Amino acid sequence: MNLQQAKFEYLLRLGDSSLIIGHRLSEWCGHGPILEEDIALINIALDFVGNATSLLGYAAQVEGKGRTEDDLAYLRGEREYRNLLITEQPNGDYAATIVRQFLYDTYTFFLYEELKSSKDETIAAIAVKSHKEITYHLRHTTQWMLRLGDGTAESHQRLQTALNELWMFTSELFDMDEVDRLLINEGIAADLDKVKAAWEKRVNEVITEATLLLPVTNIKQKGSREGKHSEHLGFLLAEMQYIPRSFPGSKW
Amino acid sequence: MDDTKQLEQFEAKIAAGLKIEPKDWMPEAYRKQLIRMMSQHAHSEIVGMLPEGNWITRAPSLRRKAILLAKVQDEAGHGLYLYSATETLGVNRSELLEQLHSGKAKYSSIFNYPTLTWADIGAIGWLVDGAAIMNQTALARGSYGPYSRAMVRICKEESFHNRQGYEIMMNLAQGTPEQKEMAQDAFNRWWWPSIMMLGPSDDKSPNSDQLMRWKVKMESNDAIRQRFIDRTVPQAEFIGLKVPDKDLKFNEVTGHYEHGPINWEEFFDVIKGNGPCNAKRIKDRSEADKKGAWVREAATAYAAKQAKEKVIA
Image 1 (cartoon, each protein chain N blue to C red):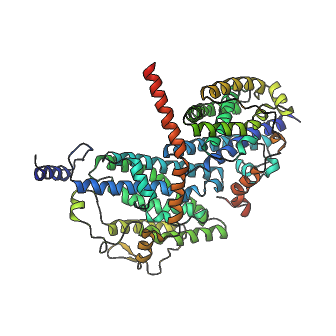
Image 2 (cartoon, chains in turn brown, red; image 1 turned 45 degrees about the vertical axis):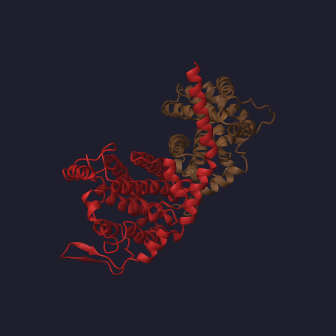
Image 3 (cartoon, chains in turn purple, red; image 1 turned 135 degrees about the vertical axis):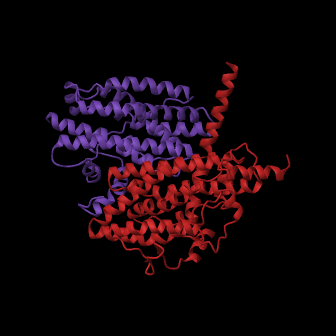
């Protein structure tokens, strides 16, 4: 694997995760628990779509085969997608959405903090812009973790259940392979061990303050880096990609 | 001061072009009419999120997806803004939502039609938002301060929605034969409902002199409708779409387009709740509300705990 290939792969991982979690959030549109949350979720989804557009656009450029960000988003299949498994998990109830989002936002908060000093100027620039947005996202989801965790008995129970169910997707966030190592050596990618330490600390603090218990499980789901996903992704992509695939070559 | 005197002052103020503010004296009929209009408007914004939200996950490019998200977020924002403006008249949002969910309150008839293809998103922005702007620019000159200020702000965003809708249609109309057909089909389905959404014709909806004098209503439905048609027909022709009205003709003398008969039976039927999506829209909104109840309760409970801790500390 050369540097160009590694960079393309790395950008897909970042971009796909944003695109897929943004898609999930956008599914809430018009169905949120209160109007203010509808607005917040759509706004956050929009940030993710914007971030995905930048990252996939850059990926297409790095690849140099004349593809565009739309080609990458709309014309790759399940096995070519590199988004983290946690991002494709269904919305569930509001507790599941908040937990998924909190775990992921905490991750990207520290990940993009690192990427701000990437030696790749484009990645660094995208990270600077995104980190400002992520700071708001994380504040939003942290507040909801506290409200739901320490709200009523029902909300506490729902949040704990969601946390227990999603926990098995968290270890994958920090897996590193040849792509990461090659790019870390070049000062381009983030060292996920470092991100992991910061993530664990912050997640533990919030879980404790939200009066929740840290889940105990040995189950670790992984595979996104090889395009091995949960069954949910196929449905999501079928929905997302159906127009460009039904009308090949058309402009929208 | 007796009521007659207060009414005189109230009317003099409006005649002088001044705004009525929440704490000013106002006749009960004025307050009631405004609550009805403003809450209907707020409900229309949030029910309107549903037919458009229907296409966010299927938007055909990342750019279109981002634009649609931004647009629907604007609608939600308008809803929030308008509910808050309505609250200045002494009614709260939860009461208003209850009226929506029970079917007691109305919202724009247009959102009871389904969005069947991607072209419908273009048609809504171009036609529905286009018609709404005609109405709302008039309302921006209305007498109630909070509502007229809301209209000024909302109209700015609606013009962006209108343009993006027209851009979608233009793109489709100039695209492949399949895309062009999709655009014409959407236009055929949305044209008449858009014309109808501006309300019954003047002979069926006599404008009370009082509402006009109080600047609650600024223009007759037919006048607004005429402006909308005059503006939209040339836009359709420009992108090569055919207006689905065989009787449509331009009157050289008046300088206006004359349209064929409007199917008011359909309009009143949809208003009564028998449109293609009335039941689904209300069900979706009520279910979102019910499913969100535990979330709102938790937020309230948490806020109470925090407030208590603050007092103790």
